[in-house]
Length: 79
Image (cartoon, rainbow, N blue to C red; front, side, top):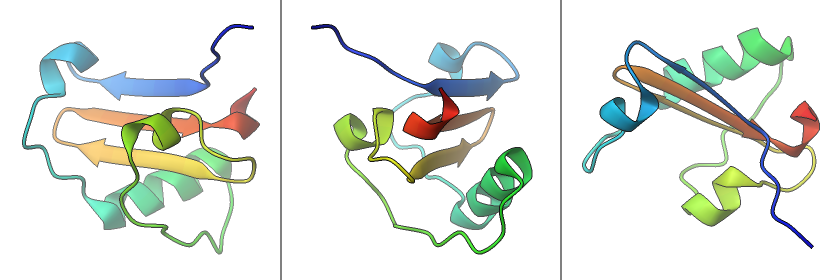
């Protein structure tokens, strides 16, 4: 059995160049991005998650990180 991921990344440069230690996500902008991409209202922030959960979150969970230079969205529902 293999590993799966459902991930979108939008970056000004490469995501690798933008993602570096010490980044802090903008939670308000992340919520707005999730609502805009998914077209859903009433989403509730879950707070920070460990990377292994955020990369493949439970069904009906969307993980969004909005950082300077890169936006990352993951969800099992994106398949």
